[in-house]
Length: 139
Length: 280
Image (cartoon, rainbow over all chains, first blue to last red; front, side):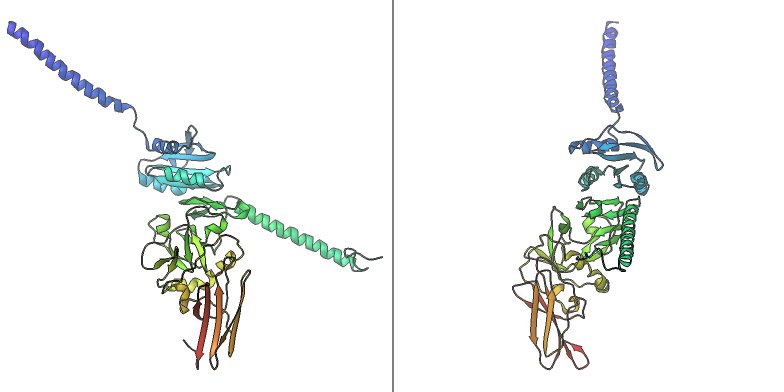
């Protein structure tokens, strides 16, 4: 009996250790539950890294996309729409110009994100800021 | 008592008043048409552009530095822009409008490989018809069709028919740049062999004068040159084009042969005819 009694704790320890390791692994994987940076976030981060200051984005309703947010950067209106695929974002470039309207602006797909900018207040008469916004957005 | 001009002569006053009113009305109409056109341009019609380009005075002037596809609500003219897949692409000299970025000096006409400049996959070769030294914001694609001499690019390739066909109309771009005062590149080196500006078949149309002493007077903003070429017993046409900082000369006359003088940037074009008009 002693032998048996000795073995069981050992087995329990091994099993427990295995369980802990497994759980730890799960727990480590669980850190990924925190949503990874979305392509839209990547665009915002790229702008911030270049010392541009986007305002907080708010949900925007447009006819050509379902997941859009808008805000301003350096006085320029921006619209960031996420699409399931780069092709769909590309296809939304022309419709995106309807959002630009009667202003200097652009609508470009960068990967799965459509980046549309509109200088409605003529805050960027030389277009330099718009150029930076578009060039900084990752593909 | 002296009568003022405004008063006019008796009996004529009414006519002058009527004329004055008509003039005012006409001016108002012109102003309204202009304003209407301006409003129309700003009224929401998007015009697509690609690449940097000047901004019209009415829209604030200066340069738009957006390199990729974008839109404005003002139009592009036909001489300084070419169509690139539905977007207007500027082929003029941006420095003339205040461009302060990297620049590359060119002399004379040359192709522009638009897709290489803007980085898209749509092959599109356009042509710059600016005479003499000028700038672009891009260097040409490396290859045998351009030669770099004295920090300036010279086109030494074989221009296609489309360049020749469009030249009479597109050469008018030089009239746009002639009055513009800006720092043009100074190119003092000899043009390399094969430069388009030194080839008779692509010489700009110039003045033709009858023998025995052919002469041509060139009108430049601040330069006038009188050239005399003795040519007994031959039918000769002579033209001189001078690339001087202040401007560019556009001649609308039959083509002629080029003879170059050094070191000043001068082009003499001489056409010699024998019998039934053979050219040499």
